[in-house]
Amino acid sequence: MSFSVSEAKSLFSSVFELYKKGANLEAEQKLQELQEAFIDLKSENLELREELLELREKLKNKEDLVYEAPFYYLEEDDTKDGPFCQKCYDDQQKLVRLIEVDQYAGSHYCKVCENHFGYKKPFNPGPINI
Image (tube, rainbow, N blue to C red; front, side):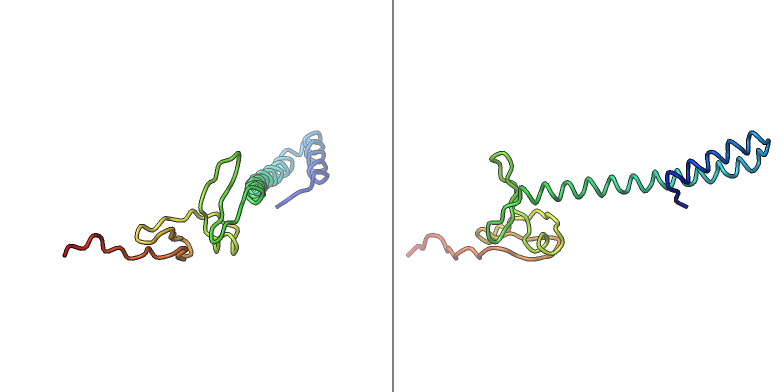
């Protein structure tokens, strides 16, 4: 149940008038309606605030995001954070930190989309004894 501000004012006025007339039961029912509407509004307000924070963070990230193939990095105040997965960001605008894979030079792995980025290390058998 959702009310506009004008509807809420009207309902408060009717509650006041009902109390003045001595119709306490009806007034209490109207107050309960107002309470339910208030709880709904608070819940909606909280959801909207969370969404706003998320959108602000995405906007900030977009401003600081730099693409250096095949990775994304966040650059802010001469600091570079990352690398982040290109596929996850391009598909869903999610910054997913990549994991460096030891057996591959410059290779990284994304646990979310399970993609590999980079190149295999050249084979180095070590010193040969003759």
